Image 1: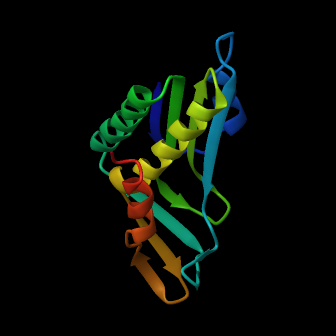
Image 2: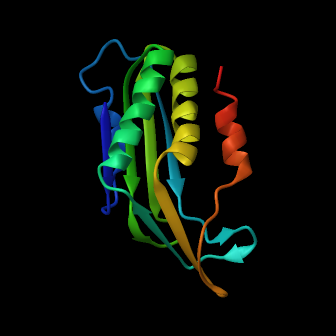
Length: 150
């Protein structure tokens, strides 16, 4: 299990290959890469700044992976989330899961991303032609998370 919060970009291919390197018990690797969009809610976005609460953020992300590992039979998982100032098309987040079978890996990866969007302490500030503003939480993200609650 790996959790990193960093300002530097990441090499998704390298990170994903590490999840299954030298493992013969892995039959599937599922990943999600989030990128900065140049448009959000109809506004042109020229820059995105992500802030976090150091220490607390890593604990939250570790908890999300632990919950996924408790729910599904997965072999390993990874979350890398960037902070700092980013531009449209920059990578923001990588969530990846390895497992024996694709079904559990897909479910765990989707669960981790849904929980990350609602549970991890990140704050986003966008720069648009109208100025800077903090991005509000979306009800669609809450709804996505709710479907996992049993």
